[in-house]
Image 1 (cartoon, protein in one colour):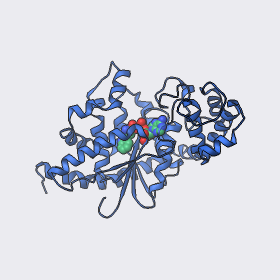
Image 2 (tube, rainbow, N blue to C red; image 1 turned 135 degrees about the vertical axis):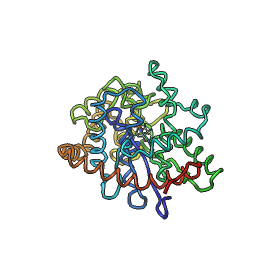
Image 3 (cartoon, rainbow, N blue to C red; image 1 turned 180 degrees about the vertical axis):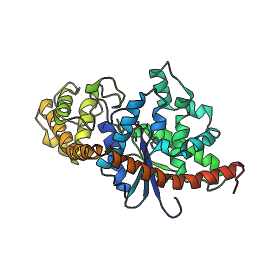
Image 4 (tube, protein in one colour; image 1 turned 30 degrees about the vertical axis):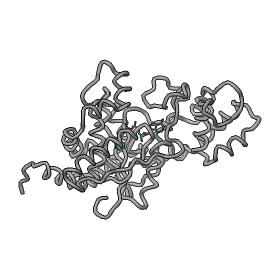
Length: 333
Ligand code: TYM
């Protein structure tokens, strides 16, 4: 709660092209909150540099992510959309939270374990303390709800623990946030290996469907998706490939698993996979059209980034000032 307002906060790293996992697990759910909550959605460029980035690409993807937020239905008049590095309070609060976050807690984060195994030549301190920066993002805005996919739940839970620890010393300093995980689409799996999460950093482009893939590419990727032995379209734990495709189809069409099973009864996987590809392409076509228009106006995007950063700073400054005072840092008037 910021004053009387309930707050929804989330973020996306501009560390690769955004996938339908990012869309279904997170971004498309962000807009739901804007009627009742004050909403902040950031482009987490400071998180992105925990893995080595090409600066020009990071810059380009930052513009793209702001444009995608808007193309996915986030109206900047109703949602504060901004770039994390433009609000310096994030890095400042992250330092303070680092001093309230335990080495053991950070060591248990599965994302750290995965990423440090994948980037053995660059296990930097930022990768390790990444959840403290994410906690700073969330706590600066006195956030009530954090809409994310299931892979970020552990980080939001650590953020809650940090907030509760600090609130024990200074009651009420932070709102303790709640992760909001969608029932359907919380973890979209790779099309090449349905036991692994679909990830924007996957080296195999056929494993991942990007929000901006053109219609033919999307349909081709779904047609090649790994299914299972058998030929029945049935939602079951021993059929992870088919279950993943059914989830994607369900998210894009709003149909239940039973309806999907009925629709494709007696039909082979080929026809089913084509239908999933078409449903995804149909649903994303308006997003892509709007994205192309927005990207053609770079000055317009920069104006939105500036407005968003100013709005976010107003809130961030207030929380940080309160925190610094509690810490015992001298405040000059
Ligand atoms: P990131 O950039 O990895 O992912 C952005 C959002 O997409 C969700 N997601 C998925 N959901 C379903 N299926 C998938 N295959 C899939 N892949 C990704 C993620 O759960 C996430 O919600 N640390 C965060 C970014 C961040 C943040 C924050 C989030 C920075 N500060 C504050 C919430 C609050 C991250 O790396 O997300």
